[in-house]
Length: 449
Ligand code: ADP
Image (cartoon, rainbow, N blue to C red; front, side):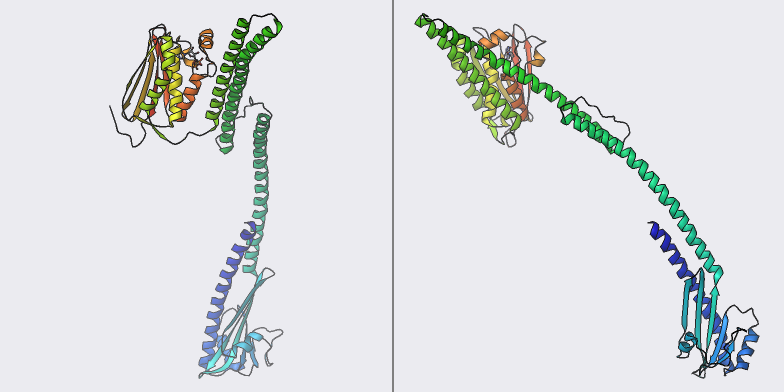
C-alpha cells in the first residue's frame, strides 16, 4: 500500500503535467508555424520578422530550420546553431512532416521538446523546434514526492506500533485461553477464563468456561456412577463370598443348609447378572443413536402386561389395560417395551396385595400419552426429583428384596429422551404413583381422541 501511495499519485501528476506541457507547446508551435506558412518562405529574415511580430517573452528555446535542415533561427544567443545544419533529432523528424513531442521528468525538472513541420504550398518548407527545461513544476512534483515519503514513513511506524500493541494484547489473551485448555486437559476443570469485552475471543472464553463446567459436572457424575456401581456390585459379591466361606468352613454342615446357601448364591449371581445387563444397556443408551422405527403402542403394552402376569398373580396385583388403537410413536418396539416393562414391573413390585396396576394409552393432538398408575406405597415428595437418577432407591431394603438396583427408572428416562418423549412421575404416599409418558405422535398415524 505504501509503495502504491508513493508511486501512483506521482505517476498521475506526471502524466497530467506532460499533457499540459504538450498542449501549451503545441499551441505555441502552431502559432509560429502558421505565421511562417503565411510568410511563404523560411529564411532568417522571415522568421525574425514573425518572431518580432509575436512580441512576447520567449518561454521556449525556439529553433527554425529550412527544408534542408539548415538552422535559420535560434532564440539562444550563446551557442546558437544559426547558419549550421542542425543536429536536433526532433527537427529532423519534423522535416518528415509529422509532429514530435518528448518530455522527461528528471532531476526534479521537466525537460520537454516539441517539433512541428512548416508547410508552404503543401510542401514541407522547414521545421520548428521548441525546447523547455521546466524546474518550478518539477520542484512541485518533487515536493509532493518527498511529502508522500514522509507520510509513508510516519504511517509505517504508526502501523508497526499499533500491530505490535494489538498482537501483544491478543497473544496475552490467547495464552490465557491455552492455559485453561491445558489445565482442563490435565483434569483440572475448575479453571475459569476471564470474559471481559465483546469480541470473538471473549465468546470463545465464555464457551470454554461452559465446557469446563460441563466437564466438571460430567466428571462428578462419572465418579459417582463408578463408586455407586462398584458398591452395588460388591454387595452381592460379598454375599456370595460369605455363603461360600460358610459352606467351606463348616465341614459338617447339613445338606439342607448347603442347598439353601447354594440357592442363595444362585440368587445373588442372578441379581449380579441382571445388574450388569442393565449397566450395559445404560452404556449402550449413552453411546448408540436411536433406531429409526415407528411402533404401535398397544401391542407392546399388551406384551409387557402378559410378561408380568405371573409376577402380578404371585403379588396379588391386578393389571388392567385401557388402550387406544393405532397410537404410533417414533421408536423401536424393543425400546418402548423396555420402558413399559420397567414402569409396570415397579408398579407391581411396589404395590400391595389386592392392589391394581392401570395402564392407559390414548392419542391427543399430536401426542401419544401412556399412563401407568398403581395403588402401591407411593413415593415420598422429597424423593420424587431423584428417582430417575442411577442407583437411586427410596426404600433400599424393599427395592433390594424386590431385586432392584435403582437402575430401572434411569433406563426409562434415558430411553424416553432418546426417542423424543418425556416422562413425569406423580405420587401420593400411601395411595399410589402415576408415571405419564408423552411421545410425539409418529407421522402417518391416524388421529384418535
Ligand atoms: P429399582 O430397580 O430399585 O426398582 P428404579 O430405578 O426402577 O429402581 O426405581 C427407583 C426407586 O424408585 C425404587 O427403588 C423405588 O423405591 C421407587 N419407585 C419406583 N417406582 C415406584 C412405584 N411405582 N411405586 C413406589 N416406588 C417406586
